[in-house]
Amino acid sequence: MRAVSLSLCLLGAPAAAHAQRTPALPALDSARLVADLSALSADSMEGRRVGTPGGARARAWLQRAISRIGLVPAADSFAQPFTFSGRGGAATNGVNMVAIVRGTAHPDRYIVASAHYDHVGVRAPGVNGDTIYNGADDNASGTTALLAIAAWAKAHPPENSIIFAWFDGEEAGERGARAFVEHPPVPLEKIMANVNLDMVGRNVKGELYAAGATPFPVMRPLVEATAKVAEVKLLLGHDSGVGQNNWTNQSDQGAFNDKKIPWVYFGVEDHPDYHKPSDEFSRIEPAFFVRAARTVADFVRRLDAGLDGVAAVRAAAKAP
Image 1 (cartoon, rainbow, N blue to C red):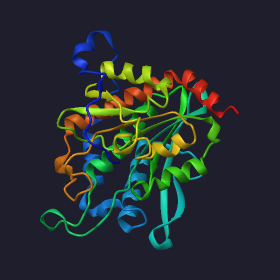
Image 2 (image 1 turned 180 degrees about the vertical axis):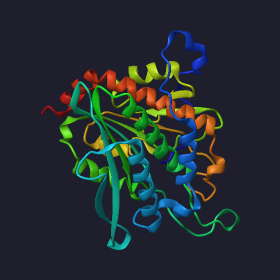
Image 3 (image 1 turned 90 degrees about the horizontal axis):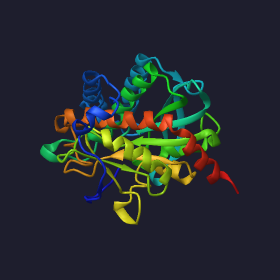
Image 4 (image 1 turned 60 degrees about the horizontal axis):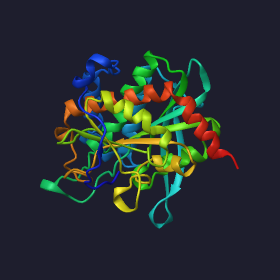
């Protein structure tokens, strides 16, 4: 993910002001959430670059975590391999990890909740000679938050099926997400929406952005409802105009946007450790991270409950 600082419309405030008139946010296992982030961003993962031993090690860890939750594969296997041409035309092999929680009312209607688990690997020495780009915020934070949301969904079955997709190769140009929409595990027309997480682990101002309501206004009331109970400052924006201020194509939601699938992207603006070896677990703000994950979980719950309206927009977008 790439972003720049921009002050936009404040939609929400801490949940305390609304606690007496709003439902409780989904309860996530905060200790597991923080421990998982620490494990996935460890030096042993070697920056999780697509097509590397570090990436494979991260993927093995991720499969164990998915199995621990008790999820089932969305296809024949959790692992969904893909290949793309890298620099100089060399083939690079990536692997998406894809699971599903079946819906109780509309099992053949799908939401895709996603995060990329890759980062940029091992590079030239940076701060203090460190060569490992741990990617704690980018995007071990989104990856492990998605695990926690999947565990909550497993324990509280949704009305619609939710596909949980951990994409590989985002840092190489959203390669995993683009492979997914070209070869989805379910018919593409039955995918109603995408919720993407990329960098949700820290922000000194307690701010989390939700992009997507400008290109898909049907998402606005759902984001606004979430903002009213959010435990972080949920802001709307970064989804219009040109350049770095528009995040539409700057993470995996871009692949869904190209297919006219409504989406909402949750992430923070850039911080000084973005794409540096110093993006380490020690820089994560655990309280913010847990609150951000709970906020996204609440949005997923609201999206599931209000998917009829989104499905109507999705159907109109497919019409000739």
